[in-house]
Length: 267
Image (cartoon, rainbow, N blue to C red):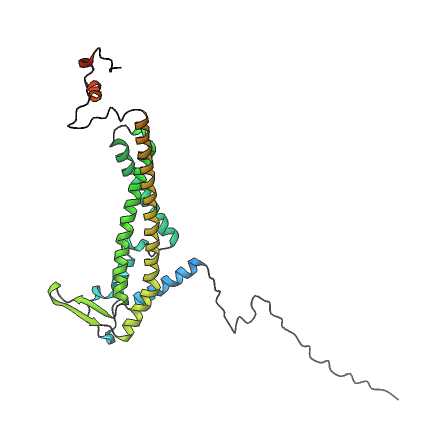
């Protein structure tokens, strides 16, 4: 009896797909890489401000804004953020600090130091004092520049945060006031809060640092002058000091030694 062995067909092979960790769920979900570093946050703020400025550069007809384009706060902000030297304040912190440092050092080295060194008598006796004077001149120049930047940014910030806009149609004699719509007010206040207020905070901190530096330079100069006066008193220069309108034998002996020849008071 013959046996017939019927072999059952082989079951289909199951191929299991194990995706790698790099491309897992990549066709379905795409997660952007988030970074909390400072320069990424700064680029995010800059992109927001540029988006607002480019979107509303020419104004929207549905808002019915009668303010001229050059007097609209959004356009004033765009002009300020790209003009010299106001654009320094809105740049990166490293670039902002380096520009201020280079400006102050250049002025102190090429203008302040030559004036302090060659504009006075006997600078070789007090070199440290001349150097402090030149450094003070550079700090003073940077302080004036930062004050100018602060005034400009504060003006634009107030116009962005305000609910009304003062403008002139043709000249100073026809000033008008326009009340912002809800859309324009929300846009301007968002831009002023996230773009202008951080700049003002940075400028305020810079002014505090510069004021402290000027105060320190003034203390150094005062200390140097005080030490010099003490040394003059100890050396006896105070006794031979000439006082206008007052006669003294000591000053007369110093300026006319021949007239007091043979007197015991003459050295």
